Length: 211
Ligand code: URA
Image (tube, rainbow, N blue to C red; front, side, top):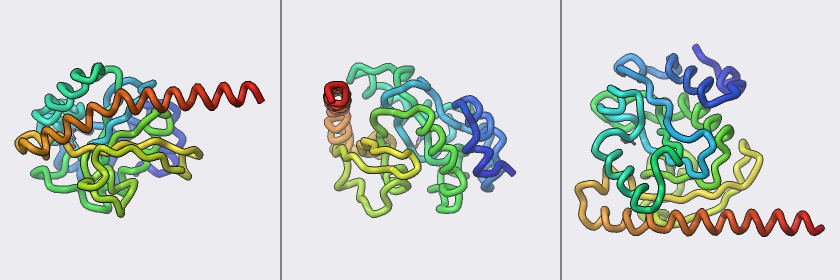
């Protein structure tokens, strides 16, 4: 069984993802075809976190390659990003049977992988896709209230403050006209948010240099 410290000692995304591919920390691997650790740019400024792989993702070993993924790619491109610019991961790395919600113990067993992925990528912003990823980090927040909002929080295990941004899940919005409009409008805030974070970083660095 892969231990927390084995995951913590992984030095690259590839090393983490290899561990996830052989993971038996919960029962989900038993029914899965492939593990879906994550995909994208290891130096991404944006990490997007979904819930769990679906059928297509399980077949291909890549996140968000089904209908929800097509919609996500569309929104990324409409806002000036390619999929290769960002990193996409999920709260759990194996598909839950019949796409049921991941169980709390499955989410907990898988969390060390996500933590380590975030630590290595060190993104400017973490984007929650839906309530499952939002609630793994902030159990008391409601996606209906948090969507479209950015917030900066101190994260102990990262040893720094981190900017987060919450969105509705693309699968939930895909066939719901009004939610789809809200998600698209929220998504459009992302480039501006990133610009603001980068400007703040420059301002802080300049100040530090002057002192
Ligand atoms: N939904 C998710 O949350 N993740 C995927 O990878 C695909 C669909």
